[in-house]
Length: 271
Image (cartoon, rainbow, N blue to C red; front, side, top):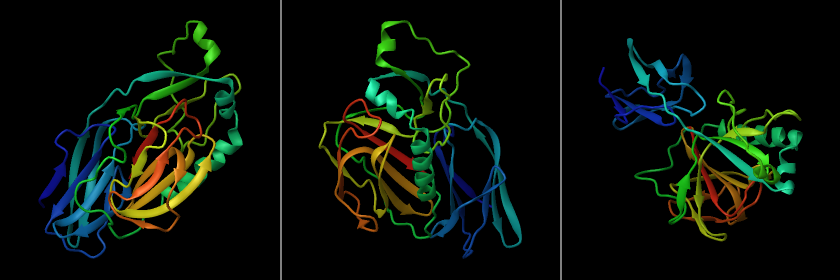
C-alpha cells in the first residue's frame, strides 16, 4: 500500500503523521511499537498520528495499519536527540511546593485522566497558531533539576548519569527527602508579560480546568482524535469546561501560578 509519512526528519520529541492512501474502512486499526494507536478515516485515507515522546528512546519501530485482507507494515527509524539539562533555583516558598508529594501525585492522576480521553471527531482544520503573540520559547524535553536559591552560592553540578523522574505535570513519582526533585519538561515555556492574552491555537472543547501544585491554574483543550493542548501557570481563565472554542478564541491570561519563577505560559501538545 501507499503510505505517506511526515516529517522527512523523524526524531525523538516529535510526531509522525502517516496516511495510508485510498483506505476507506469505517473503523481502521493501527499499532505503533506493538501497541494500539488511534487512527481515523479521512478524505485522503486512513491517518495515524504517532507520538515520539522526549522520555522514550530513539530506535527502529514498526508502524502497522490493518486493512481488510492484509496489512501495511513499515519499519520507522526514529533518530536520537539530546534535550539537555538545566538547574533551576527556587525561593524557599516555591521549593516547599516540591515536597507536597501526595498533592503532586493526585494532580498528576487528574491530568492524566483527561489526556487519556479520545473523542472521535477532529475539531481542528488547517494550520495551528501560537497561543500567545511574541515571546521567547524554550525548554521542550529538557531535564530540569530543582535546588533552593541558597544553593546558588556554591558550585552545583549535575551528575552526568542523573535522570529526571518523569514528565512535568503528569508524573506521579516524587523525589525522596535526600534526592533532587526533577522532571523532564513536557512543553515549551513562552516568556510573555503577566496578563497577556492566551488564544486557542486550533478549534476544540474545554476538557478540564484546575488549580494544581506544580502547574498552577491549568486549562486543557480537547481537539479530537486523541490530540490535546495544555496551558499551565495561568492567572485568569476566561472559559468554562464544556465550552466549544474556535481557533483564535480568547482562553485565559498569562500568570505565574504553581511552580513558576515568573510570568510565562507553559504550552504543551499531547497525543
